[in-house]
Length: 508
Image 1 (tube, rainbow, N blue to C red):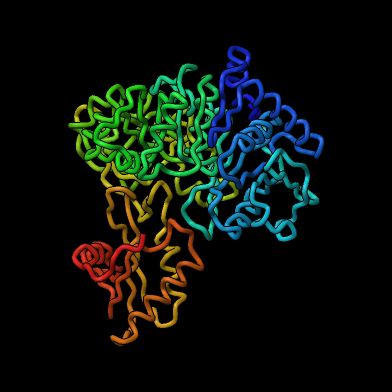
Image 2 (tube, helix red, strand yellow):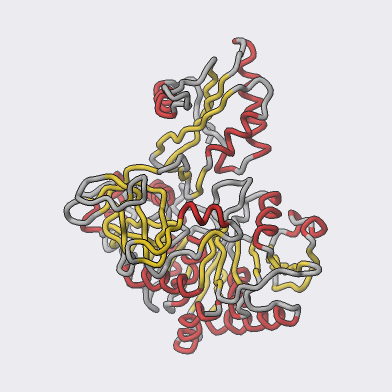
């Protein structure tokens, strides 16, 4: 199925409501018919310059009506959509472009893109969007691949989640059904096209005939977000939990917004402590705590009625997804309240990791439990007697900070580049807003008068080598790092040390 099929809902709703606002960014409004007309023009320009079905078009841009228009034009051309966050470094951009074999790059930041380094030449422009074509493009085609979503984990090894169009449609349908999005909604999101979350937050409403309001930054303390919600008639919020903290912080004692129909929160555990304030501010909103991941989009949700009594649960899997808990031998864990790794089967699973058979093999099982393929999530859960799933922890040490995945190994490598650092270990320090903060513990023989200089060198190395979400929030300088009997570094002990010391103040 070609990627243009993903836009069938958008095309149908353009015929039904051609003048309805489709996209709003910074109060710039583009209607359905206007957006489609411009997107068709972009599609013609793409095809004129050699874009074939299944070729990759990559996006490196902030939110704008023009960026969405070009994305629609690429999908209408049956291209495979790929993207990354606009704040990420050009080094990571180069790695990703090479990994996916992009034929075109769409960007609004030509000052950061060295066309010679990337083998690109200007092709055409769409308002502020610059479309660059790869010289001597020999990239392969994958006509049934709708998108490659790059995870925000390891900057050294780009991991692209390859999604067939059928899987994207299944994911879209699942989210649309349980939230109940329709053509009367106005959906506000704070994520960019640089993530699968931002992509779906844009296209799920558009395909349902709803208006999407794409914010460029999180709400500030002024409370101006409520003015924008009122001006545009926002009925739904798609957010990470940290945005809910920002919204509540900007609300006054008398702030009320009764027009909101729902809040869909995902990416981290729902902040239960905010429930009273959210229910006061949005008295008519249904609050949905959702759980998902790039490899299969949305997995489960907890309805408003269960939030008070089931903090920590993700609820039940969405219809169409089949869930299993597996032991270390990939055998099914039977019974209630027993812990296993969550594994999933169903129509919205990824095809695999792009150009990474090794990573795909580690996470996908084939022809087991009567399923063609099963995805191992890496998340450990228990299932209660009512069939609800309760998160226990990650199988590995990856964690999430403000919606971005943090790979401790990347931070540890940066620390070990500093002379005198013998060992380095990163732990996830729980935080009520950000989810987790990276704490960096290092070992070496430091004289008391050298500690400030060593910490300054660590900060400099991390600043030079890591993205903003990967910057350590706290530093701990030790003679030796604690180890378990097996010789492995002991994360639990280091985390306790961070929690017990006030030596370092948070840096973010």
